[in-house]
Image (cartoon, rainbow, N blue to C red; front, side, top):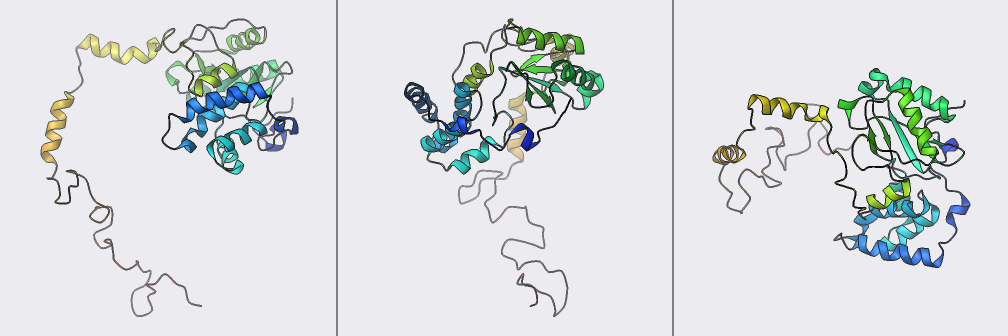
Amino acid sequence: MAEHYGIQTAAGHLTVAPESKEPYAADVLAALHEDAALVVAKYPQKRSALLPLLHLVQSVDGYVTGRGIDFCAEVLELSTAEVSGVATFYTQYKRHPNGEYTVGICTNTLCAIMGGDQIWDEVSEHLGIGHDETTPDGKVTLERVECNAACDFAPVVMANWEFFDNQTPESTKTLVDDLRAGKDVKPSRGPNKVCTFKQVSRVLAGFHDGLADEGVGAGPASLEGLKIANDRGWTAPDGKAGESAKAEQQPAATSDKTAAGRHTSTDSAANAPDEQAGDKPATLFDGDDAKTDGKADS
């Protein structure tokens, strides 16, 4: 099996297929504009809405298409280069068709030594695809992930960013088989079933699906420290008392109304004692030949 790790020419990260630039149907475009207006209204500067708008595009197209780039640029009054620069920076944005379910297998340090590497090898062979590749039926895109942010449940696998804890090669192969078969799959924590990539993208765009409070939020391993603290009667320090003590140690506010403990740009202690603001540039040599103007000899 030919495997790659995001080779641009193989996975098409930085290229967009011609068909992805075909215009949206009138009804689809109208719905996009309506949703985009709701998103943009949340930000004081509309260019700040770029990240959720890219997710909105993926909720319609399944990846960031050429027409999606044009749409974001038009709505936010940005250049297509600016939009593409962001879309190619973050791995949650796909520049080529993505599967209905993105399955990410963590192979970072802890997950790797707990079996993540073996899970990757067996599942990749089972599906016949490598990193960032999609099964022929368009159901599963496989990713080798650096960290799934759930080390206390290693090895961890995620399907559309829902957690599957304490996995094995067999349990993960069952997971991908069930996803491909169209079965409802329940994650270890979170909602009662894994939503599709398009559905999740709409949530990431800011449109809630009502599932945020469904299911278990934290598992036993994450709560073990709290349990021990409760059993032993441990409590956190009084935050208010700590704040009062800290306030007593802070110098009084300056005459220009700078808050206590804060500095202006000119009285900050960031500079070394012998290099205060306004000093001449530092030199490499002492004596008459020292260059203090930052220019080299011609």
